[in-house]
Image 1 (cartoon, rainbow, N blue to C red):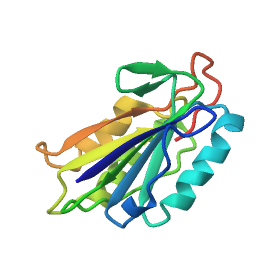
Image 2: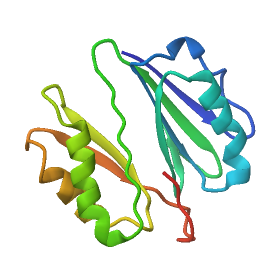
Image 3: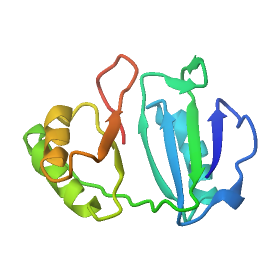
Length: 161
């Protein structure tokens, strides 16, 4: 596996490495919910990694190594040698649908080679406990499920995932 971690606060800490782009690459983007700050760098990530699986969420602070950043973006790029990466998404119009959406996600992802699920979800609309209960109701107990809910600093107005 190849791993690169980038940060953006006005400029990238180093150039994005497009040679890591592949069908077996997972790109995870964490950033502020302020669209005027994230739109440009997110477009750059999308253009550098067109074949990769990309996911992300807004935060209440971005963590880079041992630093807590604000109004920035942190991008993790993982190019796998033998691991298959699959993305599943579900729309949600009401928190009461969280359990069923978790079931749908798990059914989409499950397979003999499933080892882990990393889930990012809206931090305001989703009931995280019901979402994970829905996932757990479908998959084997030896599958690791981890992730988090999107944040928007301390505003609780709008999050993105």
